[in-house]
Length: 229
Length: 229
DNA sequence: CTCTCTTGACTTGTATGGTAGTATGCCAGA
DNA sequence: TCTGGCATACTACCATACAAGTCAAGAGAG
Image (cartoon, rainbow over all chains, first blue to last red; front, side):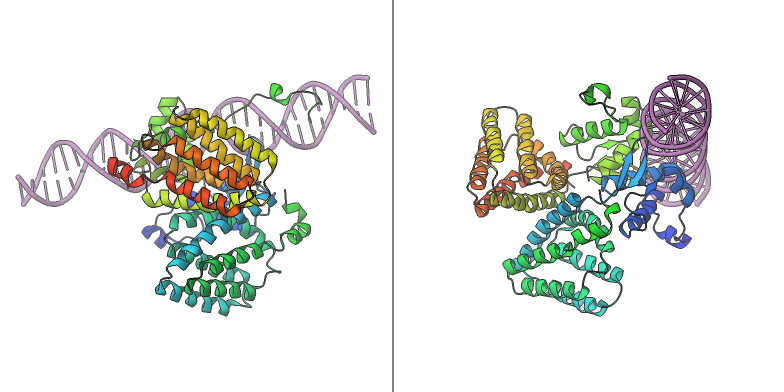
């Protein structure tokens, strides 16, 4: 059984299991806040909605619960995890620590090809200023991924992706607040520091960048207390 | 609602799901190398061995695969993940980055109670010198957990646990090599630095400590090439 | 002997049935 | 009005059945 939105042609080339489709769909819905924190979702309900059996739904739920996006309460129900302040702050903490070491590593031996790639991305990011928040978040993810990949830390990137999920859920609520222009400026400063081989400045830059992302976390909590634990 | 004065533990029996039991058992077996990297295990086989159905086994497999300890190849079989050099080194990289920031944080305001706790643990660790590797690894895990918890980063600890799994698999193969005495010395140096409020020295100390753990990774790969990807 | 095709014994993926725990609301009784 | 008991309608958990892909051994043709 296949989910809506995937045509037969793409299934021929790449066979994606129902579980993976459900996982990706639900994960996106949770991060985009289409499924709000605290919302109740049941295996049967989701299964019926997508026209699949309960089992793959259940397995997708397990994956999302492992990631801290769902809370499965046996015999009671499954709920979109409410946003935990400590979980978000710890996610930022971990991400900052890892990315700080990554950019320090990059600055020790900045590959020209990488710097060129990053500068290309910066140009594109400037084009997004004023555009949709979602477009920027995609570009932002690509940018940070390029940093990790450039340092040869693809496996570490997987950790960052998990931390990002927690943070992005909040960022979507705060899309009114954050300034794309300032974030692009921070990216620019970071790339300059890496290119110059200035590890200390690169580190300081990325740490400030990541700290700033959750700057208005307290405001968001006040605006949406029902979404928080 | 619970009545005041009643011991909750005596009232409710602890129900642990079959999935969780299987997960814990298999995870331990993989880390202890009872299930060797590359070994093939099937859902049906494990299910029969433990007298349960395939479904909970399957769900435990999914969790372990998410953690990078199993590799599920659809319609082909499930295998204990071979040790990936890059996965292990990235795990160490992440762990070093996070723990470095943790000890720096601790050094900014070293709580006397925490220092006392750590010193108690150091004393116990010294008692283990010459004992079993497993005993020390338990004490080691408790020590590092105390650091994370002391910094109020329980959520970050969960990430470290995942990284540790990758590293511990290697350490079990190298139990002949590593010197417990030296590791305890490193722990001691670290605690001294934290107690003194010397963040830079604490950072340097933990980084050296974690780098050293995988010092003989190349040797282990030469001794057990069949366990590596 | 070599190549091709078929067959069957595996594997995991998905669907469905049954069970026990939990919450809820009705209702009798105080 | 309030309380306790109970039927009922959920829930997730586990078991079982079926479906579909993979792979290797072996029969048979060239």
